[in-house]
Length: 390
Ligand SMILES: *Cc1c(COP(=O)(O)O)cnc(C)c1O
Image (cartoon, rainbow, N blue to C red; front, side, top):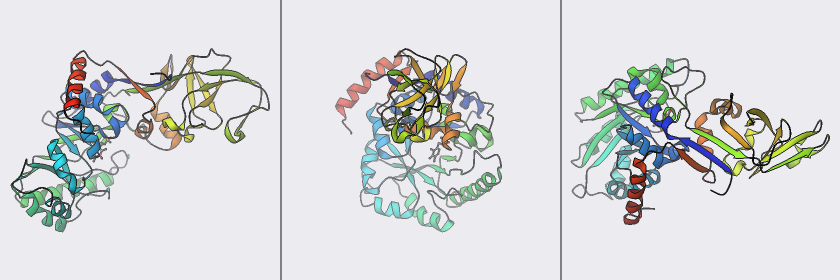
């Protein structure tokens, strides 16, 4: 690492979050750890490995590339791809033992061009139904009836049947209840068609933590494993954010009354003041929407001033500071803390948009990687050299 801007990821927090979530649920409920978008920006392989250590049953990612990356990193747990893959890539997915989401009969028809009934392994699928999010999934019994003959083929295993909630984080639960009712009705279709389904699941983090009775056979935990939970709801389950973000001052100078600072003269000093430059910008995922937020320096809050540049931003210092002084953009210094919730509310979004926006230019530095990992790192390297997937 040459640049002094880094994200620190505390794997013990992820470990404890997952343990606490698991303990809050009935024992028979399986845990699917959602590692999409590079583990919500925390590092997919490291998070997958941590989930494996605490006994996650399955992993989930959004796309085929993400699943292949986990396999190339030596991850052997079952993996579900949450977005339907292109039918022509079915054999690639099978070669890597990936479970596929199915949301239409037409997908099966196209897929059959590439996967003969008799060849190769069984395909494990999870059928996705749309109960109100309006994103992906079967919507009607007619859609289901078209799918059934394809699901009955000998080389198909229906490992799951699932839906996703639109309003799990809303205080008002009316729509959540409507979606639940629709899902229960749709579960009846599958029973009537005499198709064996291994797992029914509907709950992501918030639904699973707020309403453990919705856990069914399995929960899909993303946000909460990284320590994210909507600020307006209170969880009985203890969660700690795993990621903090830090940098160091690379220049300190005095700005005099009337001087401008940054692009477009967006900031003008109303009196003499000290300014520090921090090497992080929008190309790191620290968007211009973060203008007017604060950072921590020497345990005190300092305002970001002027427009955020591509590679740097400027802060108004409480007084003169040494070059090299640590700057915390997310996390704590002394008694002060800058939380994901605070930043998310500033940009009108959710914590996971901030963590997933941090680009690859920001080094991820891991703490509490256990001894066992050193061995795993070696295995991973030898796997990589044998199976160059990407
Ligand atoms: C991303 C995703 C999840 C995880 O949701 P969280 O709220 O982050 O726990 C679960 N299910 C599906 C279908 C998803 O796309």
